[in-house]
Image (tube, rainbow, N blue to C red; front, side, top):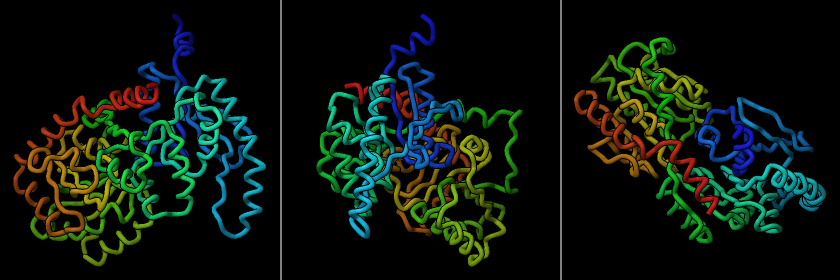
Length: 398
């Protein structure tokens, strides 16, 4: 059978995200890996749909090897100024959007619509699901900060709750987040499934490739943190802890890697105020493919987050290269890390405890090596993108 014939017999799987996949971030990393696994395993025909205001008509192109679609998907306006006028504009446009989405689903034989990081733009899919219940299986994937937005009752929360009620399945990346979602939205009971994220171990084998030298790194023993520059990631706690570590191990260097965010200026200010700027390096908006090299050249990885919705990708990636980790006991982290066995956990917002945990690893290199090896054993096989993609598809096709 020719490859195109095989493809014709596979279910279409539409991944919907609210932003461009070129952006650095955890949600995009999940979607990129799901797309790759569906394609490489030949278990589904993946497509990506991204709302784009300038596209009144559905457009299609290949972007970074992915079949990518763009369409204007206006959200219903929240109550407020000029609400009647905005509502009339929305109602005038949504029939055309619905018609184009319906045609796409039928024409490409899409069996599953999987929306990540839900927002009001998904109203059109929720309407289609109510009008044509058997047209497609509707899976909504929550990742953490989207649940926090519901808790805070942020704008459009009512629309998001209504959209969630239209979903056949809801996925979350940790049992902790499932419990949190159930508490804030009891209507999700019975439809929520925990599917852990994975790690692309083949990508991390490049870390030892001599023909792929690492980027310029600070001199000294590197402690690595990877996370977007937002207060919830706890870089301020890490900097205060690192000041204590530096007093004992003056040759250590802290490398902060992450997507530019609102907390970055504060991070830079804290470095200056604590007089540790000489020992701290910041790398912004680093492409995911560069992370393996950085991890391979670090002593260990630190994640002092105030909250994590799922099992953080950075900890899975650290395990893939056998690096020990120190992390806060927050959200889904404890579902991966067993304290004292495959990593060290400390209370969130506790720089003293964080500093002591880092010193424990620096003062006991054998412990550091053993924990890295045990973390590798934990993730091997159990946390693969292949397994994750299969679970997503199996859930939706029930």
